[in-house]
Image 1 (cartoon, helix red, strand yellow):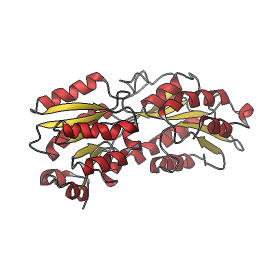
Image 2 (tube, rainbow, N blue to C red):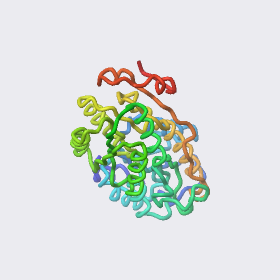
Image 3 (tube, rainbow, N blue to C red):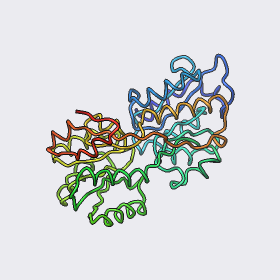
Image 4 (cartoon, rainbow, N blue to C red):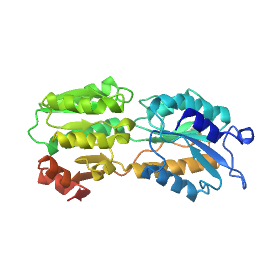
Length: 321
């Protein structure tokens, strides 16, 4: 969606829009700006809107949601236009989107999902986020480490591994912690940065060329949006990989461990419903995922010629055969 098209969609009734959330009113239309790279029809977005519907906010009746399919460089401009038009709330997918919204407004409610809200400096604390932001912090740094352990178990005997890292998301301290954890297991871990979709395939090629026997695809919105590129490239190179979201293993990735993105967006829908009913983000504690799934795709394992150890398969919550 272009910036001009987004502004047009937001226009018209702008003068009547309030500058903040308040109790739901009959006959009123609520408007949400969605800073996300994912398309409108993505399953997690459908889940979000379904959950909002349970709170009485139904798209096409009393709710307008705009802003799907955005590029990262569009976030700031769309956030600024949304604030100018007086949207009721902003939904953010990922740290870059959340920072763009926060730098644009200190009053309009922001509901976000990011890798680590505390480490990214987006909220004061989980219990008392403060200001105008709340949402879900998905424990990504800790889970990236857990996934590295799972990858080591999935590819026993590997002495070189690689990781795809997004410089906008992973800190140097986090990457160093992963290197040290790998070194403690006598494994050399190489880092391969990706800043946009065009860099993904070359980074995977470089990982394979470095001698890596497995790939840890670190948590970042960039990966989820471009997951098919990674699945196809690692398949071609017969490179075992582990991913953040269980849905990626269901889409053809080898192994995934973490919360389901659809469930995360249902939680976001519940938080947004409370905000549109008048709750202040500062009074809504930041939530965290409570259920994590290990999914192993044995079809993919067969395709790439890799045998996943039976012990790991037995521990999986879901096995695709």
